[in-house]
Image 1 (cartoon, rainbow, N blue to C red):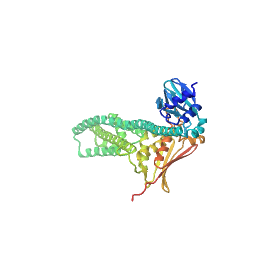
Image 2 (image 1 turned 90 degrees about the horizontal axis):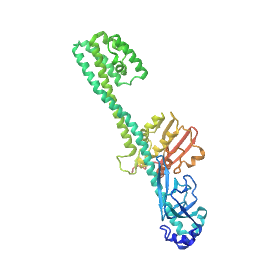
Image 3 (image 1 turned 90 degrees about the vertical axis):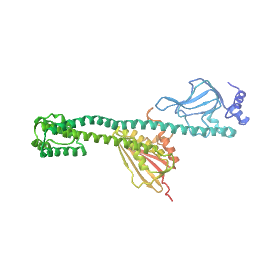
Length: 467
């Protein structure tokens, strides 16, 4: 056991507390317990109630936290620091495992003597409160940074999937375009050699126009396409024509009866050349339409990401259109929405008032709340997003039909690091970040939940009109 005089000597050399009045340091020495730790010793586990204040004399202690990507340090202390429970702190347990990294010596003071310490050691208490505030700022900054990284990772994964589909479709269609163009050229040469009359060419044009109209209109269903291909194949075989073009013609919705007038006007090799030319031309147009659709989808996704992140705007407070922000948020979460076949209904009136704030931060609020709702609902579930005005506030309602939040934990869901998800599926920071960001915008969030219906309500002040 270290004598009080030795503890007092070490306290007078302590970087943070050493300049406090000697009688206050003597009080700490008399009411504290000397402790020694070896590397790997844990003072407090995640979720365990913290009972002690630690004055570190030598060594190295860190908090380790696993947010799904392996354990890592989120904060650490060395000789001259103070850690553990601090006076007036509302935090009852550390966010992770508190563990010694090196042989460590420290003075431990139990929370039961805090009331007396506050009364007898005002200078020490003041230093400890400043330490608590610094630590809170560190955690706030670190938590927000980590949650942004986690959100960015989810966003990147979803966008990679979203962009891959139209990009692959555009590439596939572009490759097929070259072959389709070559087939069209070959069929055109055969058709020119047939030396057809004006009436015969007019009959070809009528079928071609039917195909072009079919490409421009909605495509037939898979069942309709299969039935049409079978009927066209039989028709082609009856007229001695290779049925390989049946699938292409069926894509346009052309039926075998529509080909009868053409067969009445043209026969033999000329009919074969005419149908190959029509099919190749329709295929080229269909592929060009697919490329355009894919490119438009990519453009819309990039525009949604730019709107979601405000990447082309300086981070400044401005009048924010929440309709655009929520719409962009739903777009960037599209992959997850489709993966679970969730029906997301966004019903925002066109005249909903703008709010004053940082658009990118508010989009982080919508992303966290909608993403949480997606996690909560079952496959083929429903999420409704609506908005309205209440006096001088805009109120956004996000409602899902998931199992609900148990009443006994509803009061804790906004606490840092609190999560009901499995390790690796949630950081426990999303709703805490929502609360912090809304506080920055003079807003608030509340929840009402029962089995089958959970509603988060976000209230934000209406932007002041321009004078």
